[in-house]
Image 1 (cartoon, rainbow, N blue to C red):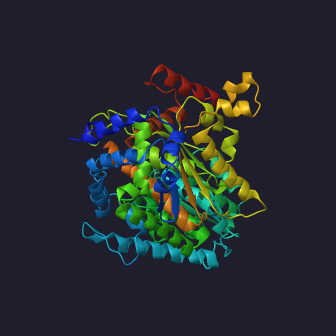
Image 2: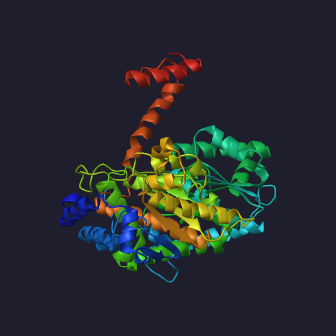
Image 3: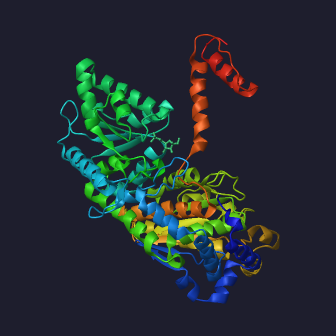
Length: 550
Ligand code: F6P
């Protein structure tokens, strides 16, 4: 039986404390606690400095939240994950993405197998292949060097490498073009292959299961695009596929069935969840782009955060504190969403990446034992890079009726230092955190000569909580640490809520229904439809548009 979080004794103390916090403001907390507040609520982890002082929380709040985590036996849960226990209970699987970034000299034996040794074996194969592509030793069928890498995958087999390739674009070798195709909408493939020379293109088909409709459809069309472009068929076509196609998967049989030789496959394991897989062979496209050495530094960043999770006391443990503040706002203050606002254009895909990480992990309605969750779980995660978001939805953040806690992420140095751009970007980052927390009062507006009729419209109440994450620069190690920070915060929240953060059954039904609807859209004969009237009508409308019998 899973005890709901709200039945733990710590919850009662936390709820009572929350009632005393209702009238307090962030500005009031700073007044009361003085300069020491920021120092006491700012923590370092794996090269990231995380300032939690602009939260609607005191050190007592954090202490009570830590009590909740302790009563949820978070320490044991962390140890169980690192030990390879089957904490993904509904799929009866270990959850070992932390093994993907353990150094070579570590060992982690699960079911009699040293998984760290296996991880490094694959990493070494990936590195050798990436070097051969980068050095021009692995060429296309006609002997031309590879200049373009197209990763075909979706969800975790796309979002991680696509986000990271953007984020680390400054490290991607200039003569290599990386593209990411995910949507089953052919527009994605057509647009992403436009202008690429097939003779210089390597396609990486990335799919944990190698059974995903979108990926297999795109991979088939990419094969046709490549062979058409090269003007090849028959045995020559097979030889070309061997040079231009590699697979990343856990399913060797399906890779072979698709027509890719398993010697051109890079494997991973069922204990790597799709949304936790960017640091596995799923990152092959990224590794080719930035080089194996930079990829290892990326992994080292993850590992540094893993060690922080494992060793820092909860009171100073950044992923734990961020997770617990998320619970505070979600379950006590009623926040339904959280914004992620990276002040770095290279992190433009980071909010989308976190949407899968957090919402696929923790968007759950039942506890581990299957009983209904008597409280909200994952918030809706969304965001855009600053400063763009400021000119779009920040109005709501400052003056809207919703409580939207936000993560602001910035870097002290730009990877593209041009003129004064970075000073201006950073000034905006710091200003937004200040404005959100402290706002602008009626009196301040009056003193500034604002006409009386405008005053209510121009008051910004402040009191909007933010986490400020600052790091030196967006380099591979920092990105690894940042991703691991959110992976672990997501895990910790799942533990506190008492849910399975590692399954994703909610995506199953839509796939089953789509499989059934495909023949109903395509068949020659008028179909016998047994859906609801609205679904039937949409199917018939599509058939009519294509001149098919109805
Ligand atoms: O539909 C959801 C999902 O299963 C994700 O969890 C996963 O990342 C994605 O599909 C892709 O799956 P695969 O890597 O097996 O193609």
